[in-house]
Image (cartoon, rainbow, N blue to C red; front, top):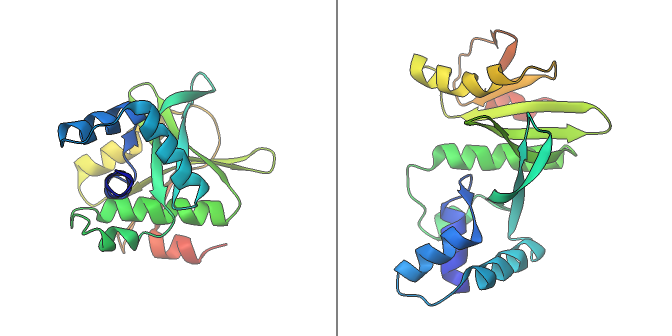
Length: 188
C-alpha cells in the first residue's frame, strides 16, 4: 500500500490531491484503504523527507485553505525510478522550481484566485512576496494567455513571474516578468 501511494504521489507531482481522492483511486485498483490511513501515510512520507506538501492559499480572501494541497518529491529523479510518464516534463519543471524556491528560503504556497491557480506564492522575510507560474513553453498564444491570466487577476503590486523552458522569451507582459528556467536558476 505504501509503495502504491508513493508511486501515485510521485507520478502526480504538481497536481492537487486529497487523501480521499487518493484513497478512492487505490480502492478502485483493488486495494482496501480509507482516507484516514492515506492521510497518515502521506504525513509519514513528509516526515521522512520523501515528499514536500504545499498548501493552497486563497489570494483574494487571504486565507490558507485546508483541502487539496500538492506534493513535490525531494528528488525529481525518483520519477524515473517508478517509470514516470514521459509527458511529465512540465511537472518535473514545476518540482525543480519549487525545490529552488525553498532552497532560497521562501515559504511557498499554491494560490487560488477565483477559478484560476497560481503555481506558487513565494514569501520570505517580511513583505518579500512574489507570484509564479511555471510552464514548459509560452510560444503558443493560447498557452501564454492561460499562463498569464491568473497573474493578471491579482490586483496587488507584488512581482509576478512566469518561468518557462523557452530559450527566447519576451521579458515582460503587462508587468509580468518572463524568465527562462536556466537563467532563473542561475540568478541570485
